[in-house]
Image (cartoon, helix red, strand yellow):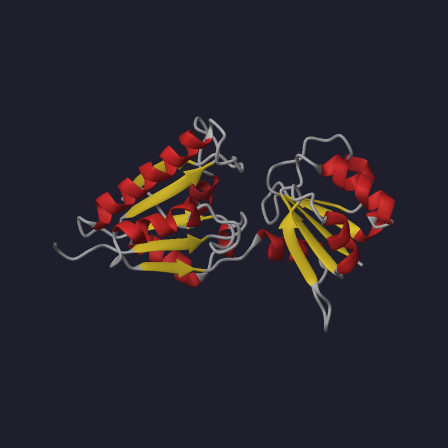
Length: 241
């Protein structure tokens, strides 16, 4: 076996290309193969549009892989389709590194924070234990949202909890127990969350940031004003007491 290529998992931030780190730009400029995830089979990759805002993709080999942006139960019939996408990505990545090519996997926000890549990380290493994987952190949507809104997430001894808004179990208890609560993926359950905040008297302590750091960013402080709206998938709620 010849020299193996390396795999780079690159956090590219929440949307603004200028929020990519110097290290991220350097590696993405140098690596010849870029593998971009996308949420819709027929759609385009958001990650690719962000990277293209900073570096030229003309000389790159571009691979786009569809990753459905949803959690699927193990026994769900659709889980087979998702698993096949992960297997396909593993095969593509290994095919390049075995030929000695470096490949980068740009991922929105920070790679260790609800990242698609880690669904395939362990599989890659189980098939090729000598594979070198470098993870480059990035700016998370949580950080970008709080910065855009001009509020700190934590101060002093304050405690913070971060969880998907779809995690209904103990959500009420979490809201009562922590000083700051970050809810990700609120778009499909916003009205239900709003009702819970009303019940707990926390509506005026919450803000919503949609498409943080992008030119379509919205900061909503009056949550009641967006009831029944179809919010974007990339929407974050911050509840700070």
